[in-house]
Length: 355
Image (cartoon, rainbow, N blue to C red; front, side):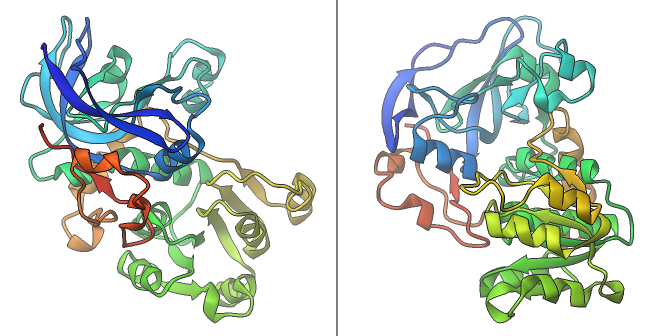
């Protein structure tokens, strides 16, 4: 396919330009997707603010990585996909050959392939992602919901690695989209969920997504004690999931989990004082430690099936409800696009339109 398209190009720190660029050409095993919905996640916001991501994107480069759309063109050798199909493509795929891949830790792959360019009219999907992490979207799933597959896959893997069981008391710290997904999926598994949130709007959303109890940190003296009071025999949660990415939340997670319980530090934190939470305190408490768990390549499939199986509207994945942005409106990112959102403090969604 020849011609040009409109795309957002990242040039550096808080420097995005809307340009006309060549439509990507597909090679053997690759697929060209016409983007219908592209989302903005916390990683995109951080990359915009910092101007780069050490592994994921080096400017100048096309920007954005969560998307859903339709197949526009397929390269030689592509199987299972044809023009017109509704698809969702994740943004990474492992090599399948390195040490970590051999240990089934695909998210730690030494040659993890990343793909960017969702904030454009078209995006080329590399062969490795086509083969491992591109899915057909069923007719009853919207593009908006399908584009949520990658973050949902992160949550599913996080719960899988944490080892939650039916009947566990799970404390989820954070009322953003990821925290709400943890609440929703943990509830669907059969856990008793305590959501720890900050804002009034997050209280309502956490209850809507299935939280049995909600602790609002602005309404209690001590969030840790509040969670322990709600746990069986005040022993603490079986599992604590930190989905905020702040040092104090890490400390709360360690303190509110029971002896022998599991703490999942889902959001990475950079400590100025490395002594705030250390492995020594974890060992003394007898807790099991889980580090930051990004999306696991291949987990997109169960993520999408989860959405399709649930018939009740209370299990639908509606977290990003802010108005869609035309691609051209990205030309003024300093106009606080990150504040035009609701439903759990998320930067919102970007829906490219044809020029």
